[in-house]
Amino acid sequence: MKRKITIGDITMKQAADKADYALSFREKIELAKMLDKTGISVIELAPITDGKTDSLLIKSLASAVKNSTIAVPLNIAEADTVETTWNALKGAAHPRLQISVPVSTVQMEYFCHKKPTAILELIANLTKNSRNTCADVEFVAEDFSRADKDFLWQAIDAAAQNGATTITVCDAAGNLLPGEFADLVKQVKEHLPNNVRLGVRCSNEFYLADSCAIAAVAAGADEIKTAPFGNFTVSLERFVKILNLKADACDVCCSVRATELHRAVEQIKRLCQTNRSKPTSFSNITSTDRTDIQLSVHDSRETVIEAAKSLNFDLSEEDAENVYNEFLKVAANHETVGAKELDAIIATAAFQVPPTYKLGTYVINSGNLMSATCQILLKKGEDLLETVCIGDGPIDAAFQAIEKVIGTHYELDDFQIQSVTEGREAMGETVVRLRHNGKIYSGRGISTDIVGSSIAAYLNAVNKIAFEEEA
Image 1 (cartoon, helix red, strand yellow):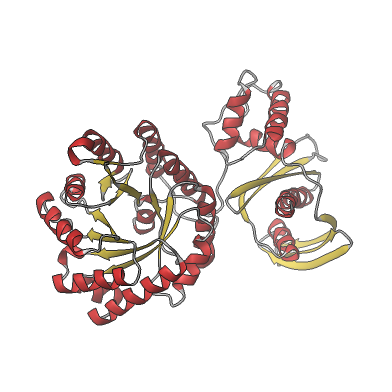
Image 2: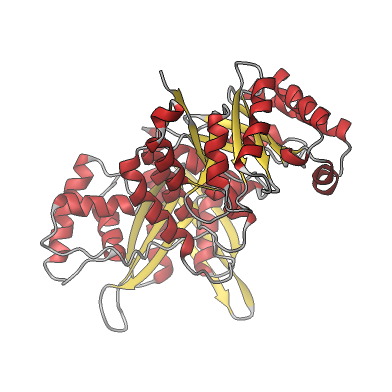
């Protein structure tokens, strides 16, 4: 029986450290889904540094990924890092906690400002606490090739004895030839207990990462960290190709589906190669303007529903039928139907539910010499819920007031306003998309008042979330 090699992806972890490419919230979800479909064993994320935003991303990814392991490193600078990270990760089908610590003298003092004895204590405590929380725990020895051998063995033992299921060694310097790297990997493998798997991450400083990875597999490594984009580590596509071609010679196999991999890699490259402007305060609100969606009345039901899936909508059979019928009505009068039009169609035809929250009254105060405020009254059954909020504008104040009344914050994934009729009394249509637990909920509102249509759209989306949670 061939030995199975676990393949991990570090694209999102690397994106947090590099300035040459960045990924939006939506793109990270899309990336994770693509990797999951190809059979990648482990998807690695960056540690939590911005508690609210990073935790939301991890929870969303945990909900979206069905088969791959989601691995999140602990933030070793935070005292409650195990609890914080686990609270965000625990919804994953296959969660993994990582303890990533430098083991070379120069990096221990430069990055951690700790002496070797303190590092060993840190490794032991974090590994033990992680294993008490999560069944899959990985210790990552950063810069292992420049570590003192005796200390390296002590660090590995501290992790293994306290419950680490995987020990990974990382060659940060990248100055080893494949034979030299294989010799070190073999020594680590012989030192590990039989029940602990060995992972490796190779630097591509000498453009030998792929060769070092194959040499590591031959030396006994069980897990290889890769990326489909960039030249900083092992190439996912090349490594899988080599592994498949030499599977018999190395007596190994992997779970990655090579036939699906090439298309996924090309899509991921396009995500990462996109030129991006400097981040703004709205960087976490991602637009649904997908210029690649161009549908016509001649498109089949399957094509339309597939386009809806690309916008992150998971439609039931009944909703899919309603959306397609509504699409045909719209497409009959338009040459093409794009992403924004399809979004509005879905908001109109799908996920219609009885309202949990009904709008009573609202009062907006706004001007160029004052902050916008919204006083809103919502009805939930027999209860009247009222509050006042200040916002950056009337719509922001209204949305914050709704969230304050309900007691839940939702991520605004997209917000659109467009004219439905012409003239001074034109009707405006607002479409709001909220992200909750990894899913998208779209709401629609129409009014001659854009604030009124925005509130109606937001409540429409919130009621869909409430209905699903109460079901």
